[in-house]
Image (cartoon, rainbow, N blue to C red; front, top):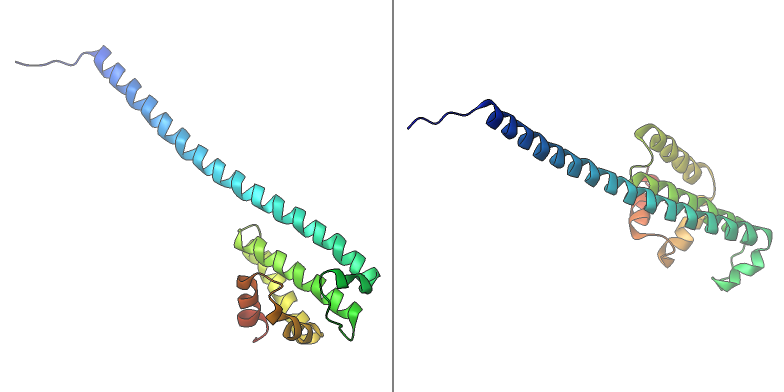
Amino acid sequence: MASEIGFSDVLTLAQTIGIVGTMILTLYFSKRQIQALSSDTETRVLNDLDEKFHNMAMLVMEDPSIVRVIETRDYAKQKEVAFSFYILWMCAHAYAMRQRRVLDDNEWTGWLQWMRNCFRKGTLSETWKEVESDGWFNPAFQNFINREVVTK
């Protein structure tokens, strides 16, 4: 028995393959879009939290006595410590954006050099030594600062 495949059968098979292929491509790109949307949402949430921290830091720098609401330790140089926390939080935010691949290599290189300069040339390293053990920052960020910034 010889079976013959007619033109209409070939056309139906090609259409079926085309439909299945289109569905697979649609699923693939939908998955990528959902992942990108999830990353965008996380980034927006982090940016919103960073803005709230920025506002709080501005209040603390204007009146360092209000920091007692969150930290009762008396620092000798309250304004400097408040500003140091602000700088450290900004560094932590840049680190988080790098972890989420929001900052490209060039932007990250600039931020990393800026952080190293702050620790090397200013008093930020002194504040870091004083507050690092209190656990104010993400452990991954703390490890990064201790490995990549303070020691360089």
